[in-house]
Length: 361
Ligand SMILES: C[S@@+](CC[C@H](N)C(=O)[O-])C[C@H]1O[C@@H](n2cnc3c(N)ncnc32)[C@H](O)[C@@H]1O
Image (tube, rainbow, N blue to C red; front, top):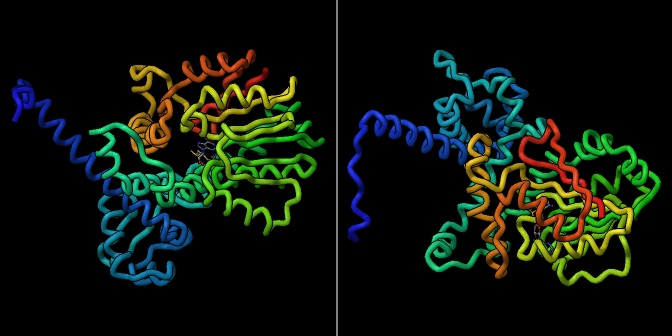
């Protein structure tokens, strides 16, 4: 063992014991997150939210699942204080107050959907460890269900909330969308946000572009199924997108910090907009300074998201590796450098994770 690897002697054993307790809580929280993700995917929370207290057999039957697995999962949920247990009758109940944050019906409040990102990231742990040793990154293709999970989370948090809660604050933009304008969504992923917009504003024309073919194929199939005539998707790198068309509105939902070359893309976005056009960028609410993020309740999650995905997909393309927590100071600086002269940053009550940047030329 190298000399520098010999641990320093602790002087405060009370502090050490308290930290051991913190670690036990952390291990349990991590384990519970993994089980919550399973509960979400198996729709156990959705099923239990609609049921009175019941035994494991009834819950498993209602969910169409194997009772032995459901019973073990319930053990984790009960000891994790997520589900109540009545030992006499061996019945389980999901409190309505907890269901408010665990079911699909809860939409943007559904934190169970967010836990499904952890197993997606864990899938590439071996590659990430190699990156710690040798640098480089991990490309999107290796993340398995990433686009599916991302699409579900962003549709729940942005989706209808964009048309119902965000756009009404911008009556001029809303009026233009109703009248009919050209809209481009960059890094559209599985395209669900654009699908909602295209249905809400049938006179406007929407184009979604994403680097990855798999989510675009799904997006195209969904748009075709709905017979939407004002919506198109293309799989391509934004840096290769050549357009003679000027857009009235360009949107980027949780995209810029993932890009290999965000500086170049922001300049392109500026050039693709009409003189009176608007760039709407939704990105993570954080500061560019670690010390200012310590009171952000999502900070450990955000730095984890960055290391296990956002920074890393960018670095896999030889990119800047901005990271999820590039923060509002850096974002404003880069938007100004790209040529945007008028930047307004807004927060909305329904979205605890993000800030909305309204940028004019
Ligand atoms: C975090 S996801 C957000 C997806 C979507 N906007 C949403 O909210 O669900 C970032 C997306 O940016 C896409 N992307 C990354 N680099 C890109 C590039 N150079 N050109 C086009 N899309 C890119 C990724 O494929 C991914 O779907």
